[in-house]
Image (cartoon, rainbow, N blue to C red; front, side):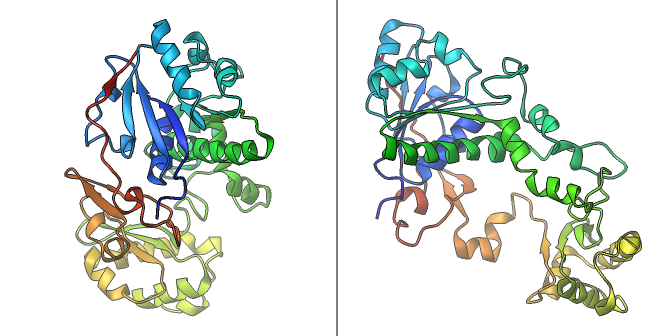
Length: 360
């Protein structure tokens, strides 16, 4: 059975970061995603290492600085359900591919745009990257050690969680609305907006007095003994997430800490003491020894795996969470569906096209 988005036609204007990630998500679910690259762009000849380019129907090279290239793009847009682009505000307009021009050709088109700062506002035209966008969202300030500076969480929060996923969600929302109204619209997905949205729970905790402004001093930022990582004898790490009392009790009991069942996880006065005790305990065995000891226990303890280890973990193997395509290990498509699970993009995402057509 084809993927859940089979039949959906998407035009993706090639770029970096969140837009191609959105294109990958849509292609993984069965959408026909046609990439438009400009001459000389690396995206014009994607290879197997460009994981974000997987699953595309094809890559077409168009010189959008020519009338012929723009005309060809508009012809393709006339037959598409959605368009996604990740340029700075105003770029598509200068190319002659504004939302107005595209909607004149295809009134039902969903025009998906992802930028760092959004399509308007004082910073809209300014350059930036993930770290800049999440800095203004409050997310970056909350991540890092108590006695150190903020630590960027790779580029996961702005580019991908707050950008590409938000764009994919927005595009699909707009497509559902277009089915009712018969009219397309513009989706303005900003990485700043998305990163701020991801901080929703923390905002609620802060308002309730359960989150302070000190980095590394809260329940979910490494401040609590029951929710942090611990170094083991072999300098590898374990992740501990024993938030609930029953899980913490099992954790402390296995570690040999006295009165485990009577310790309240939310007694902040004991966090530092228990954290230091657990550091010593975990340092006595190797990571894998601890994993064997915690096997089968609901203590919320997991090994911190690096990318060379993840594909071989038994649970990842059982769920086929990682696949190898053209020699490149990469995450498999997600989420899973009860009926739409025979799509090639879900069982084995296709590698990027390496023979782009030359048009325009």
